[in-house]
Figure (cartoon, each protein chain N blue to C red):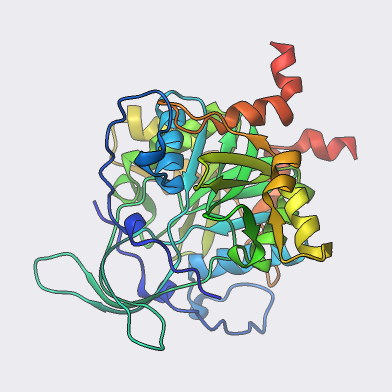
Length: 199
Length: 199
């Protein structure tokens, strides 16, 4: 199934400045913008190198108008075979998918088997793999270790994961002004605490 | 400067089967195809999880014809701010750029300052960063640790790196049938030998 990305991601989004320190319900939430800003913060403060991968696109036709840039005139969205985000933090490989949901559950239709298998490979090869799930109606964002999602997806009876399960096994991400979604705080606590303790 | 990708990468390239065990000059070389096949081999044999990132594209206009997939009708190539390839091998973060050159030198115009800075960050945060350079006229492919390229790019007097320098500081990648370009063999020898010795 093809993942049609939100149109917003196609443009260089202009970010609005927040006046408060926390999310307010009326502002609305855009998980991708928030993660991009967070990753930009991590990069500019030399904390981590984590990027969103470009949307995979199959290009069919390109025009080469004289004296101007090549123009793609026919192309289609392709199904991603990996996750949206990966990078490097404290010498560790980080890999994750990020999804918003309006309801209080996470339907598995939002994630492909390819992505589940990819996350499973990452764990097997010693990387850190998780999913960030934003419940937009209640302004809560969780980091859930990929192992829970893989297990529920492959062996569970349900076709979704409930909010309660995600809340139980996941970790609530602190929201703020800078960084907006400080998910590496959770990575520190639950994945590389040993590294911290040495300091 | 915008990097216009080779048109070939936009399609699902059909790979031709090689009959011999080694490159033959007449076959011609396509570094991207060879690396994609190599990475596919590493993935299917559960050796490593390394992917080429999609080409970054700025989408301007999308049509939504009824009953068919969304069609991108206006888009442009964007300048990549990171490298083309990254992934995970034996618990280590791997990041590299791959370039072909017809001449016996590597002109720095082929790589952007953004990419140089990205590779520098990767080293700083404990990742493995290198450049794969294919000299297509002589069918030789080298893996060069990114530190040499960064230094020559930022502090060197020349606007290119000679074949002799790359040969001196780099490592010749073994070419074969499967995998086509066994660059992880060099990563084993020169980056994670300690891990191997423990086995």
